Image 1 (cartoon, rainbow, N blue to C red):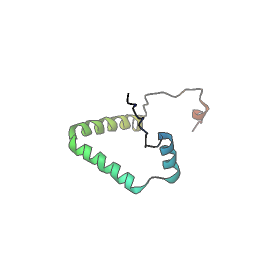
Image 2 (image 1 turned 90 degrees about the vertical axis):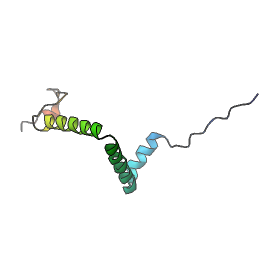
Image 3 (image 1 turned 90 degrees about the horizontal axis):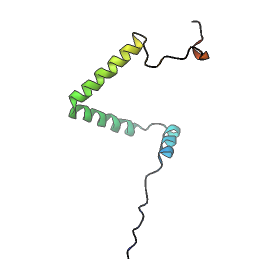
Image 4 (image 1 turned 180 degrees about the vertical axis):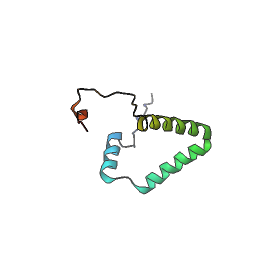
Length: 84
């Protein structure tokens, strides 16, 4: 009878990766590769990208221009008690 060997995960845990990025900062090559991937997806699916961009603009306009939010703040919250 053959025994199956357990596969060893070579990837680091997600918590370690996030903590490492917070400590060492964002590397330029990581940022550029991410921007390149986002731009490539935008070119591959232009209508989907346009739909998402319009939805984001609509939501930002609603929050910034009209002052509406999806989740109203609690009136008892002391952070919003400033009279100015």
